[in-house]
Image (cartoon, rainbow, N blue to C red; front, side, top):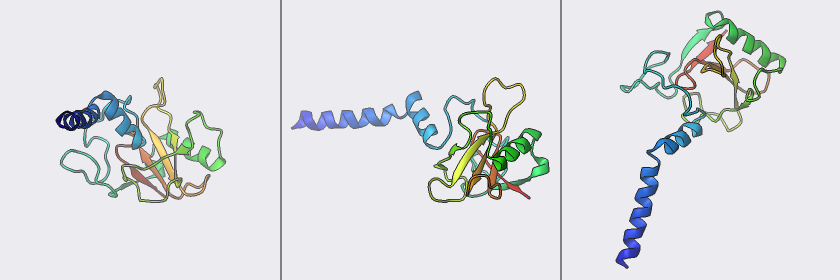
Length: 156
């Protein structure tokens, strides 16, 4: 009986500690809609809303940015969203889960994510626009330049 109990404890401890390694953090990051392969962001540099002591954006606390304040590439992405494409990357328009609840809470399937090109980048970069509601609508969109670590609501 003791050995079965000890074995159960070892299995549970292995599962917990296994989540602390690279694979576990990657899975947790991907579940939030981000990727562990992205470079870490220094806290507070790109966040636009209120921050916690650790530098993370407070859930549901969003700053705003006007369309004219966005980089030119973001304006092009918004134009493509309204036109329904064609988008430069196959992952554009995919479901954004909002697992970290940094955006206002809505039913699954409400948000979709789109790449904002980064000049000089050899990959998709860290800039994205996430829009909610029906496809081709840009009334409820958010901009992130730090790969989903923080968001600003796109106003006007």
